[in-house]
Image 1 (cartoon, one colour):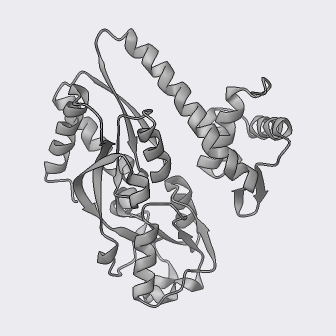
Image 2 (tube, rainbow, N blue to C red; image 1 turned 30 degrees about the horizontal axis):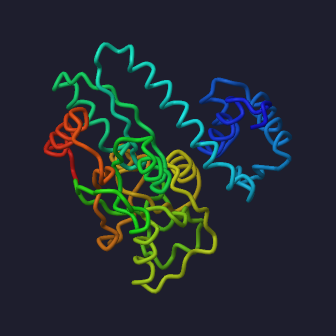
Amino acid sequence: MDRRIKIRHLQTFTEIVRQRSLKGAARRLLLTQPAISRTLSELEEILGAELLTRGRGGIALTPEGEFFLPHAQTSLAALEQGLAGIAQAGGAGVAQMRLGALPSVAARLMPEVLVELGRMEADLRLVITDGPHGYLTALLRDGQLDAVIGRLGAPETMRGLSFTQLYLERVAVVVRPGHPILTDPDLRRIGDWPVIYPPPGSAIRPFVERLLIAQGIPVPRRRVESVSGEFGRVQTRHSDAIWFISAGVVARDISEGTLTRLPVETAMTEGPIGLMRRADARPDPAQDMFALAVRRALARPDFAA
């Protein structure tokens, strides 16, 4: 590997993509925006390729950027797991579990699970990684995660994995309060505004496609394809964008009134959320403890599945 590539280069690149902006990455990494821009330029110069394009609509990956991104993410995840393992070795017997959580699960279920672990006084350290379905299941299959909670994926993404269903979740169609479509909430009108649409390979893409096909609605031409919770949340709140996203991602936003759910029927987008493990995984006390906390969280009357 080119020794000029440093961890800060990979962190900067992946955080820009995650935040969908240089400004957001700078805020998360506690750096100035010029420093973020300079680090990205250094990486592009070392690689001899442009990774991102910048315009009024924000940043977008180039083909070279799309190719390099999963490798950068995997490298950072492997380093984090190694550091966590060293910390665990000196942790006086504290059990550790490496969990992958899809955005809807991270936003909706995990806070409740942490409450239950606290009530159980469980001596369990969670290392949580979020991301899209394909990315997390690949880490699980490679042994870099112990379990993943998320939607049941396509058969090719579930190879070598077991799936235990926990609850069912629908896709929500959300807009900002006061959006013009709320005067006549008809999905056939979505083409009149920009749409934030799930990208190929995301777990909810087939469900959204099925919903539109059933109503004779073509895939919107004016669309940005993303399942980023942060990007979708900011873009929808401050524009006339219409966002297709798992209901769990925006449950709190809807309850707080910062986003509004379009009153359209989405029952056919309902899909199972479950706990995924490697099919050949052996019983593990830490994972059993975590599974108990999940069951208790789901049984709470204030958790609306």
